[in-house]
Image (cartoon, rainbow, N blue to C red; front, side, top):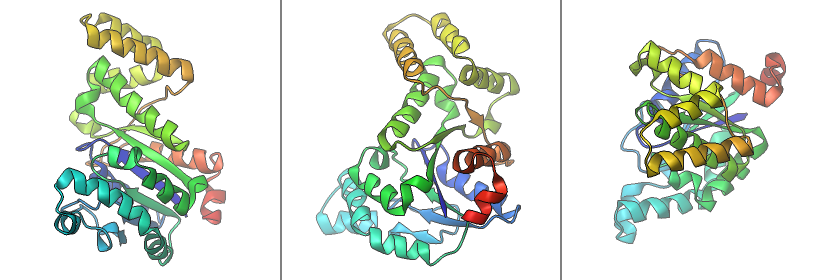
Length: 257
């Protein structure tokens, strides 16, 4: 199976996208296994085939260790790695060509914990990609756009795994604004010009420097708008997944999974 990790900041729409992408895949007869890796989720908007909350649950950890939500989240992150054998066994009991993995709501609990590297390695790093969701509420401004790009780049740097950068909830944006953000992602000079046109302050100067650093190291990449509401952008997302895993050879990827 090929692993698709869905990652992004709190409120970026990870669970909703997981559910919508599963529906899109089902409509094309592509079997998927859905995995919830958020031990603190009160509920998820899909029927998880494998749910980490069966073995690690935020509320139970808070009670057992007398911790608040933040401390318990950190303990949960480490407990997930300790339960990796149970997780992998549960995943192996399901058959599908793709595994779509919903990561914790607070992305730092997954991105910056060593336990997450253990999980990714155990599930097959060489057959994994990250789908990073950029929140449109943050991406609307040049500095916010650079901030999302930086978070996406840090995720790729942390795990050394291919990353597809998505603009989630694209349906909330007008056509003109959507085209502006897509232009920023395809044309570095357009984004650089927007940063220069912004009010010059310490934040803008830092945004310009971050932009230069990302362009230098080659992590600048196109942003794909997607909408879980109308299923727009999923064809392009799938094409990127196909390109990364099998160089665009869909039939070979499907047969090998």
